[in-house]
Length: 303
Image 1 (spheres, one colour):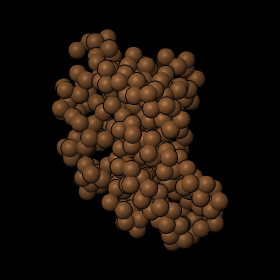
Image 2 (cartoon, one colour):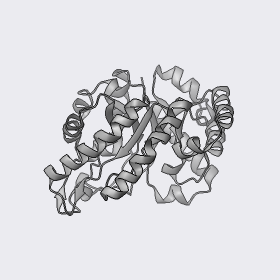
Image 3 (cartoon, helix red, strand yellow):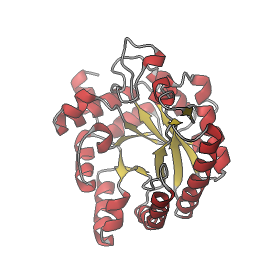
Image 4 (tube, one colour):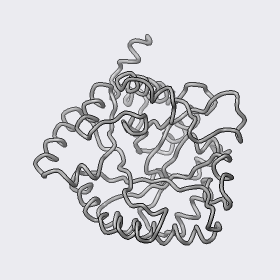
């Protein structure tokens, strides 16, 4: 396969070639591209993405006829939903949390009507004020409430741990920053729709292995993030907001990561989330093309 052929190869053909269920997802925000929900669909079509992040605010604000037209366009282009972000602010005050909870049922209902089934968020790995146990109790109580509402609307709820040592040591009290600790939090929440946002970056920076991935099943993985790490830094020197596109450096074992997930029968959407300054400075079309090429290169590693 020539490089030119590879870059323009339809994503559906890559899926067939890899015999996989995971989809290559476009999330414009994670690569620094500003786009409305309709604009992002057109971008996904042009660049060969297979799934698309859902904007619950947009879906809730549109007449059902407009949403129906959008869904028809998705079907025409053979693009499916990836995940939606979780809109409730649960990390700060009780007042902010309650305000978000009051708005969540309408957002979750809009996602359900549109056929979105995955909602995700991330967990801060440290606190200046709460000990690990205090933080665990607070997170479990608030996330349990969110999970119940999402469950009532057919949504799986994925949580992402943040792995770099530079992140979980940045405040007084470390919190959840590994797969094992996230399992404990999910167990404490105790809702059947809970699972992981599995990020190659956090898997790597948490010092985890293929064996750790094999402790999971498809039902445990709600969504996937793909990134590579800068070369020339030790594991403990890696910084969360300084990442690379998938397969850019080879520091992270992308082949092992994706092939293991594929062997688990994983059907989650996978987006690129590099927090990369050079990528964010590119014109939108260049950033989209670079992201699409990196994601297709990563998925071509699946045997």
